[in-house]
Length: 128
Image (cartoon, rainbow, N blue to C red; front, side):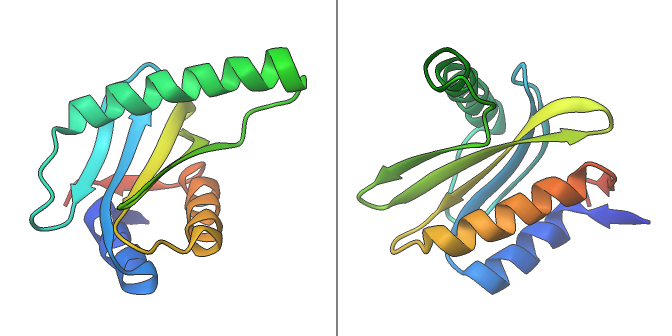
């Protein structure tokens, strides 16, 4: 069954509230799907480039310093978070990222993002 990335974004925003963006990119920074809330304007390709670069550094740090596999990276700011997790989509290594607004619940974000990352491993998505 094909699911719309837009519907996934709407469902997550309904459950978590105040999501600014949800993005799926290849590990090398090419945008596959991207959804933004109204009023939050950002170029999907820039978000993909940033998240793939940050994730690559996180993966290297996890491997070299902690001697373990990468799971996620979170950047906390005064006005929200960017949370990035590794996943696979159609047999490609990918990064799923979420940008929240004010007063994020990190536990909920982590829970929903890891569940979505697991779902994407076997999903077929459409842009609409």
